[in-house]
Amino acid sequence: MDPLLIVLIVVVVLAVAGGIWFYAGRNRGGEVPPEVSAHKPTSADDILLAPPQEQAPAEAETPAGPTPEAAAPATLERPESIPGRMQRLRSRLAGAGGFGRAVLAVMSRGDLTEADWEEIEDTLLTSDLGIEVTTSLMDELRTQAKVLDTSDPAAIRGVLREELLKLVDPSMDRSLNLAKPTPAAGWNSADGEPAAAVLMVGVNGTGKTTTCGKLARVLVADGRTAVMGAADTFRAAAADQLTTWGERVGVEVVRSEREGADPASVAYDATRAAARDGVDVVLVDTAGRLQNKAGLMDELGKIKRVMEKVAPVGEVLLVLDATTGQNGMRQAQVFSEAVGITGIVLTKLDGTAKGGIVVTVQRELGVPVKLVGLGEGADDLAPFDPEGFVDALLA
Image (cartoon, rainbow, N blue to C red; front, side):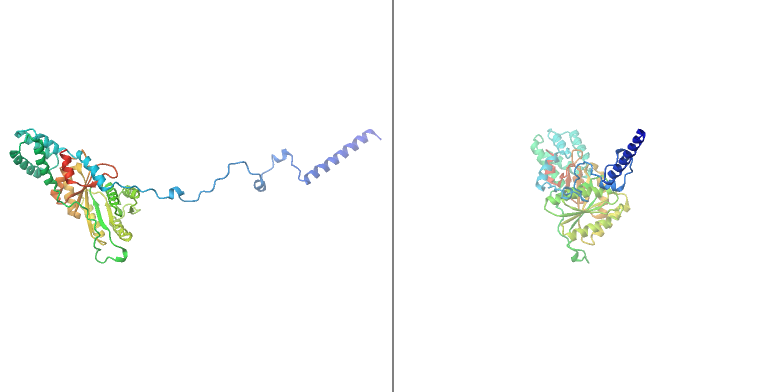
């Protein structure tokens, strides 16, 4: 056979065999050559059937809402007891003006000259005692100096202490009226028993909202329950601040989510909520206002009247900054005319205050200083202690 023919036959046979092998391999599910798979478009089947990539185990899905730790109630603070804070604040009252010590130092010099008496008078006048009180105290001191040996500091101190105590007047009732009031006419007893109502008033910047929160702590420390009403609706920050104070000791705060809402409405809602929940006291914080703004002062009267649709307001506490001195007197008089002040809360009664404002405000208004604040601490508010105050002035 021709050799060329033999080669041709072999080539044909090999080509046929190769084709058979190729198609047989595809039918058996053989691999597609790499160069084909590299350019093959990715299909949905390829994605679903592809082996998973190596990765960290999936974490359990976190359910919506707060985590168990966040959902757990925060531990409530335990306010300092009343006796404890009074003892602590009594020692700190020593910084509440030094006019007593200054007068004592002059009177203990011995034979007093007219210049010495003028120095005493100047000291009293610059201590916010006012002219009338200063004149009365000077007359009494001059009389006592004639019958006493002014070289004896103990005797002079005793006289001065006695006269200052008369001015501060320990006989005034400084307790808060927190007795359960008689419900207003038409009040439905099914809505609960009204709580003792306390209205907090004052000008801007006296620390009124802070004092309201601190007073809530005083009540909790005394074993009472309370609700606070955020009737300062002109400052969202005031309601937020009051809410923070309440959360710390477990006191509910009634507030409006709408800035500029009717403060009387918020006060009424708080008073009703206190009755519904059966708490002991409702504290209502109001917006600070200037005493010469008649419209704002009338609004205070409206707030009080609306609250008294549930029950009488037993306490209207005027918060005064002790450092304002005689300027605070005009504030006190106007607020007293608008809503009938029952007590004074003096804030910032520390080394920057003269101390005489305690005497003056009581004489002018005929109402007692009931609470004093001496610092920024949460428990730096306590009932006013007349004897402790006078002893601090003479320490």
